[in-house]
Length: 368
Image (cartoon, rainbow, N blue to C red; front, top):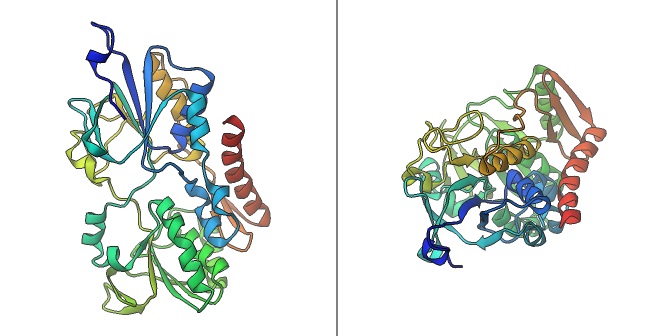
């Protein structure tokens, strides 16, 4: 892996550099677009921490036993080859927005004219340990999902020998889906959802909340409105002072800001993430785009805007932010669809979710 410097190009000319950090859905669509129409005069470099990224939307199905690992894997190598971009499988060390340079492992640096960030959520170990002491030693983190997927078969094997006590720590859709997926796969185990102060499904309409709570009761998943303040051997301690017996604390809380952001020079929001405008450009450094929170539904529009901005043309697509379709996996081939104030539940909804997720990966295999 050798970074290109000005001295390695024609004197007086430096090739423009676009760096794609991560293989999230927006960057997948960017690679698909580049395979059809490469950028002229711009070199594109993709940096990923894993050579075999997974579609995170399919992880609950993997846990439930609906998918094998290969079903969830994104075929990145042939897609990268067809798109003509340079691919570096390396760990990011730092980003300097002022000098427009990235440092990766082995102290190698890469310049960039544009940087797009679309990486899967990575746990901030130091911050997580500060929030929940003992989480690193005794807990199993859902993120990064590739690491979780490599460890999950050991949990399955253990769960097949005896009933486990598993506490899912989190309150968002990811944590809810994970708890229900665990119930489908480990039917004899005790599954708890420790959700903190946030009511389960608070962001959803009342009809969807009723369906969600009824499903959790039917699946015998204990919902505990408390905070985990410490993980210890065989249990977790709660803010109320209670102790919950637990063989595996499964950490599925909201993503934390990556440690490198603090020293990046980018303007950050209260959560430590890069502060962006309506087009997901950094408010302080507009040549840095942050698509981490973009859904699969929005990802194609963002990819269009990214390539339009880099090539110097106007943004062509608007990110759809209102009334997105949400489909919650509910175990046993059921799911809840939520759109605006409407909701529906049934096997057909699960079939739709399954079709969307499988189609996303299948499309990449065909394109590759």
